[in-house]
Image 1 (tube, rainbow over the protein chains, first blue to last red):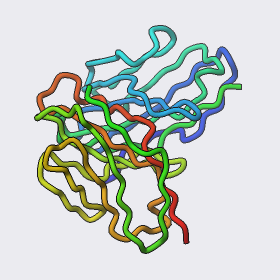
Image 2 (cartoon, rainbow over the protein chains, first blue to last red):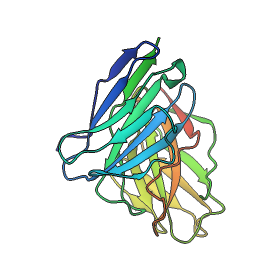
Image 3 (tube, rainbow over the protein chains, first blue to last red):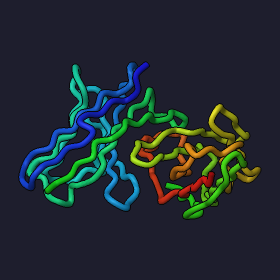
Image 4 (tube, rainbow over the protein chains, first blue to last red):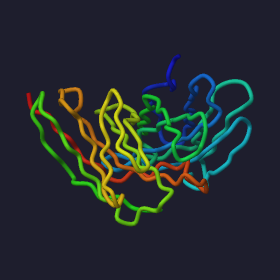
Length: 115
Length: 113
């Protein structure tokens, strides 16, 4: 059973460009989460999605950031008009359920560098 | 959310046991205690979780104090591959927004050869 896959692993963008980060959850997992890790900081929750639905986007910046998890295909985290402060590692996780005992399985992350 | 307190860093020697402590004095009766770790340049990795009783799996053991206000992650024989940041996280079994993992600063474990 393949783990959570993310691509690209490294992404370089110039200020003002768009960044698209993709995440394929583990097989059978319908719950997807995105976390961000800024340099020298801890991981912060951004958004929680189920198929075709955003359940909680309370951790996502209000502007320029959006996420989707379509019926078919991977989850996408989209950052429009990137700025230097968006440079970070973005991790996707998936789980089978959301109860307090369900572990989340993380992908290897996408490291975004904004020039 | 109930908070956890961990030492910033710990050091161990290879092949020796490591005890990583976590204080969670405001834990509620329905909070699970989870441990994750993050190896350098990788995503977090689930290690173990427990509610009241001590737990063992192939990676580690989790010892939970009788009053549940603290717990200890035990690596029985540290290897160089265990060098990572270890996070102790509480998750409420009763729902709400318990799907959000709240990562603190964790404990940076250094393993000496």
